[in-house]
Amino acid sequence: MPQLIYTVQPGDTLSGIARLYGSTVQAIININNIVNPNLIYPGEVLLIPVEDESNPVSPPGGLIYTVQPGDTLYTISLLFGVGLQFLVALNNIPSPSQIYPGQKIVLPEGTVNPFQPIEPGIIRYSILPGDTIYRIALRFGSTVQSILNSNPGLNPQRLVPGQVITISIPANAVAIYRGNPSKRMVALTFDATYGDNQTTRLLQILRDNNIRATFFMSGIWPLNYPSPAAAIAAAGHEIGNHSLTHPHMTQIPLTEVINQIVRTGALIKNIIGISPYLFRPPFGEYNQLILNTVAARGYLTIMWTVDSLDWKNPGVDQIINRVVNNTVPGAIILMHQAATQTPDALPTIISRLRQQGYSFGTVTQVLDP
Image 1 (cartoon, rainbow, N blue to C red):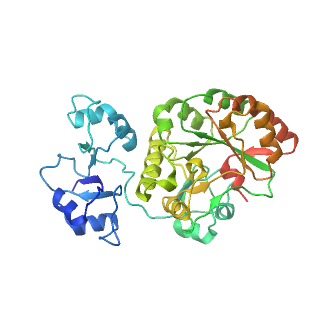
Image 2 (image 1 turned 180 degrees about the vertical axis):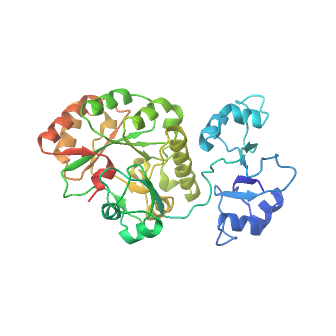
């Protein structure tokens, strides 16, 4: 039976949605793991099993997506990892530029649905060189036994770099401002939302200094700049989720918070092939509900120890002094790939911190015990 991906509208009820699409309330409850059928919220995304002949014909096991305001066919193709021309042909669309909110788009069998209900609080982690189960457990606030229970057959003596394992994280989440204070290592992080800007120069500086950094990308950034985003990943840098459109997260409905996170994660995965598990809230704004919601989607919330304030363009010397003078072991340093003075400041920052005995790693490496 095909499934319709539906975004709840104001005034909707499960019974009304079921009638509209020829489904049943119980079928919707079952497929979405709904605990209280009387509590659904505008903006929430539900899967609807459909048999109504008025809906588009979908291949067995396929999906039907309802176009949302702001969607383009290109965005939809990237969101679901389906070729643009394939979508055009499958849906007999005369012009890819002419789709409209409410239109039904058929997706092929085997399409990975980012809105699929998931088991909450699970990180999918790719093992790094030198990892041990004990160190991974400490890094993510878990236990060795919990990781072994979640990964049947995993041999803790034979961890393979790149191997993906699942890790349960605490439901009552915290924001992380600093890595391991006993390690004289720091993480350079760059937030990317608007414009290609300084990406090429920053990558060259990091390459010249043999440094791996962490880039937190808003979903619109790899969408608009897929080549620079791919170049960042190809250089071995870590990728984090920075929301879709960089909103004030505490000022939008929780369902939109989830939508921002889910869409960005899907875009990053389908554009550059990486599934992020680190999240940085725009403007550094969060509350406990957002932290728990982010954790339920499989993300650690990462803040910063040192804010370079490079986005203010205060002057190269001011950026250098602010970072160098405030760095401590385990520091997570906030910068921006669009800040015009950052590439001029970065080589001196790196040189001075190395003179003080610091090494550099990704956020994950700095969190390492």
